[in-house]
Image (cartoon, rainbow, N blue to C red; front, side, top):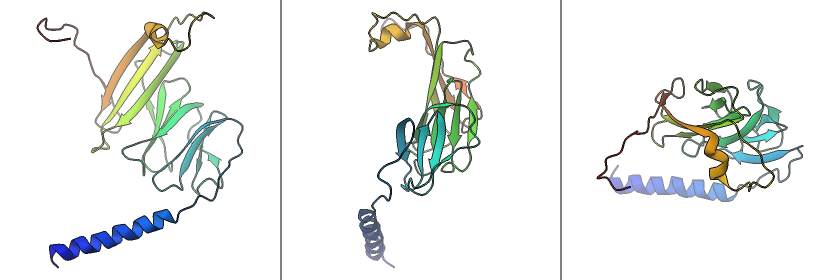
Length: 196
């Protein structure tokens, strides 16, 4: 088979998939829940995640039915579908910020990733996780741990530099899907000749 025929067949297959996607209409357009901050869908549009009443819930039928993720007992603050591996991977952040849960199976199973360097006595902590676009084994976490946060009614909530002045930031990288992390150290001295 020559190259032209291969491209022609590939074009027909892609055209058929696009036509099928245009025919897709969601079955569910409204969900009754107590308090929902966000709902996200994986690539297949049938697997949905949401946090309802501080519990991560999952739907595998486009939102017709929901169930709590039983393997996650902690309260969940937020979650995100991985932008680079959105067909299989998602992250859920525990309310205390010390743990992130990771799925590589559209929510079938979840692994707990703990960040031991953070202090349990912090006033506020959280971590964000991102994946490498080409290698699913590589993860990067940015964690903030905040202590001695003073709340003043006159403070502007949007004044983030003031809020984060009592925070320590950790940048971590993993080469083994979150089984271990190494802290990325920033340089402590700068060359005077380098532009700032």
